[in-house]
Length: 312
Picture 1 (cartoon, rainbow, N blue to C red):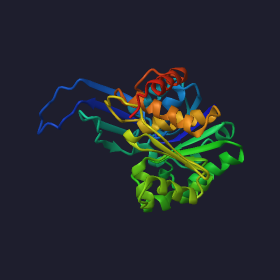
Picture 2 (cartoon, one colour):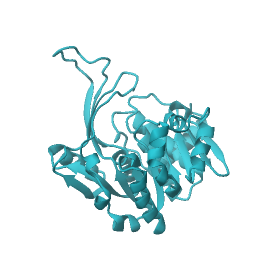
Picture 3 (tube, one colour):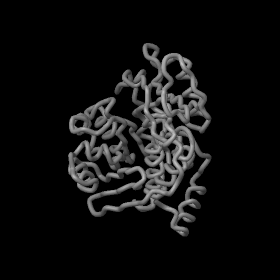
Picture 4 (cartoon, rainbow, N blue to C red):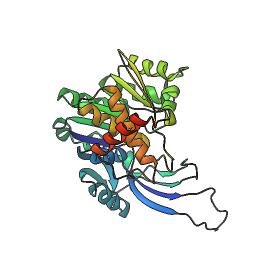
């Protein structure tokens, strides 16, 4: 599997546990502070690499120290950063996340270099040579530009997928609508699906997205696992029972695990199980890069959980 992870790359700075922000110039001791690569493309790239894919990053960063650190963190996982363009007029996209004791994650975010990425920056030849293109947050380019990239990929036999970073609302759906018919797989969360469609159920919302031209919708639903819907079937896959530390990057991990399963020729259900297993491992620690798992390890984890019934 040769995958281009195109889109949003963010440097995350996380601290936990943070029950409240101190007033004034007060300070508070925490157990852990960590810096990780993240973002709808960056976080997905990390799990793709752990699961044995050849991963190429495509997106924008600044020429600042944050950009250099983000590049280093990606390269530590064997991810190619050759096609991360440097934008001197922007700082690197970054987020500060004070993680609450229950795993919730409020955020302070700078959009940064992401807004400077355009069609001229996209490595079309690299995409044409890949087996898979994962588009992390196509809303930042808009549906028409995203459609150009995705249609180019499909013309060269590349499997296409995307997930969404922004909250779901009908206006955003219309903004990305031109891209939807060029997507083999859309990987939103349940709140986004319901917000996009105003549907009364997740299944209804997924089917409404299929009507927009998407080939398959694999929607995550937190502790309820995932729902995978295509033209013929709908499959609910439960989550794994874990003690949640931090949910940062869980959706990205699911996306990478699911698409890795698809690349290996696994069924939709088995691919979703792999995605849920990857997300579970990430959620047990701090940051998008948490967990030293690989494909064989996740397969063993899934088999053991199925045997013992250790799911939510």
